[in-house]
Amino acid sequence: MVYQISEGVGIRVEVFYRPEQSNPMYSEFLFAYRISIENLSNHPIQLLSRHWDIVDSNNTHRTVDGEGVVGEQPILMPGEVYRYVSAAHLFTDMGKMSGYYTMLNRFNNKTFRINIPEFQLIVPFRLN
Image 1 (cartoon, rainbow, N blue to C red):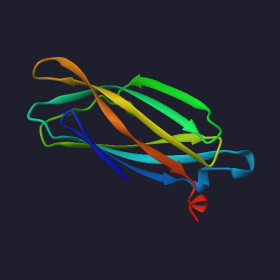
Image 2: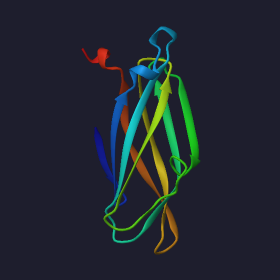
Image 3: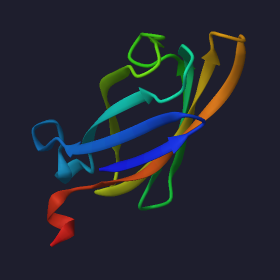
Image 4: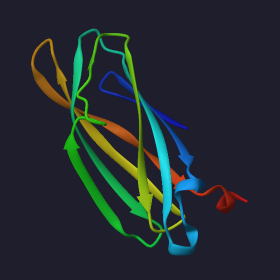
């Protein structure tokens, strides 16, 4: 698990390897991740978009951009936490992800970026 505070927003990431949805013989590895976004500021914020950089162990780099997360653009009041689960598919048994969210301060209508801390995607047998 990784945790980071950026611009008054806490981001917590937990990663889970999904062996039942992976096929190592064909270099297919699926990782689920749960992200918690906590509004530590004193004003409402809204998640507008996401940007991901995904790198696997053969140095293949992919970028993913899109509106919101899991089809939502949640609004968080001060002190609220929003959680969602998503997944990433790799062609190697190790990799990493990082990125940022573009947020809107709903008090002054200014956008700002929240860094998503880098986290590792590693199948458990590689950790032995």
